[in-house]
Image (tube, rainbow over all chains, first blue to last red; front, side):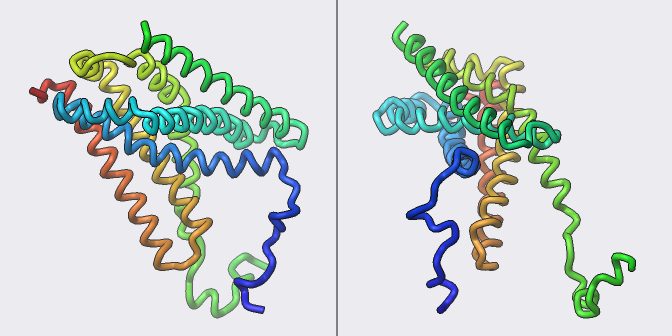
Length: 130
Length: 131
């Protein structure tokens, strides 16, 4: 059997996911998403420096459905990576490494991400219409 | 037995081992992470405050010395953090040596180029170089 044909471990079809490993994968995924999203940030800054026409193009894109969807994903990724990053820094200091703490911290991160994303978008929409 | 005797003669002859850069990579990832906690929160709050603003207002805000300084710091910390993080992800999942090296180089150079572009844009607004 060649290396490519060997069964994968964990066996993904019957694998029972755990919060801890899922959050770990999300941390990496959100990091990659944030990196890609920073292209938008630089585009926005360069356009603002360039002039009205270029800036209008960015505004039109960000205000479109696809732009808003990207921004929402980017905001959620940012708050997740920020909260889970703090969880990682706590671990790096040698604290909260037992199983119970990793689960409590994990759910805290999920709740904080949802809350912060919601708050940011409510504040944003409120700011936009006022 | 001392540590040096633990290596095989072949291992000693080839001389490969730790590149001695791991600790610095790990440490800089944490330092930039710590910096990005306040910088990231500040950035989101600032952007929410700017929603619906026209170009002149945006330029005026970016051009304020304090905002410009913090924006430049955010760009440096974020792109440094991204370059280090992307490198780890690439090294973990890409196993073909040539592709891995190529992707790490592309990621590094892209982060550097984007950081320079962003910083230049902020400075040009802060120093009134826009028309």
